[in-house]
Length: 258
Ligand SMILES: Nc1ncnc2c1ncn2[C@@H]1O[C@H](COP(=O)(O)OP(=O)(O)OP(=O)(O)O)[C@@H](O)[C@H]1O
Ligand SMILES: [Mg+2]
Image 1 (cartoon, rainbow, N blue to C red):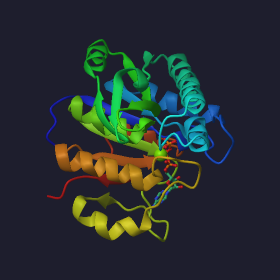
Image 2 (image 1 turned 90 degrees about the vertical axis):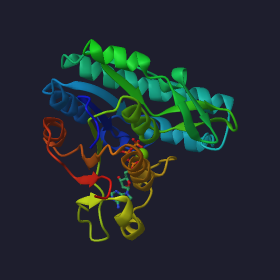
Image 3 (image 1 turned 135 degrees about the vertical axis):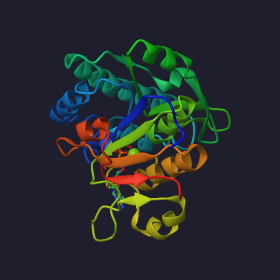
């Protein structure tokens, strides 16, 4: 790893804190609270990005927002993910974490579905004051499509690279990336990706941003470009978030080849 910062970027997957098989807006409040308690035990500099889960993906799919602008769908999706963000920030605050809501729509721009710019100077300043910025999957204006979905899996590596993060963890709802027998793949590198790709698919729930395959592709790209390693682990297993934040390798490690 080529980072000398002490910043950790943690994704709290929408699949870990909402029911993605349900209709729009099904939060798992108990899981949010437990994860918040585990995060509260960490004293380092931390940026949180959470997924949209059933809050964003359901509307995004209904209105085809991953393909372009639709006024009602755009507003509904944004309002929905903001509602989830507010809930998560409140839960973190209740555990004493100085969480700050940051809606990526307000400071990002995409082109043809890809993030081209996300302002991070305010995040860097917040970290100097030990605040915990909490970003999320969001709708985004797109210079070619009008609008698109900016997934947490896409904004997270961008933020990690911009801040030269030391550690990146993605908590989801499976024991990391699984092979065809349901066993955790311990490590994925750009070289091994070709052979394991066949086992990795989209989401079992509603997801417009590629599920597990989208996630792995985004953070493999981060590893290749910056050398920053990531772990994908099960945030629904009690103790995993705390163990990861403590410094353990949990779940599947995504890193560069030697
Ligand atoms: N090989 C695999 N290993 C693990 N999960 C897989 C695999 N292939 C497909 N999946 C699916 O991908 C899902 C994880 O992606 P998903 O986008 O649903 O979660 P998330 O990123 O935590 O949620 P969100 O996008 O709302 O933040 C798993 O729950 C599973 O259904
Ligand atoms: Mg996802």
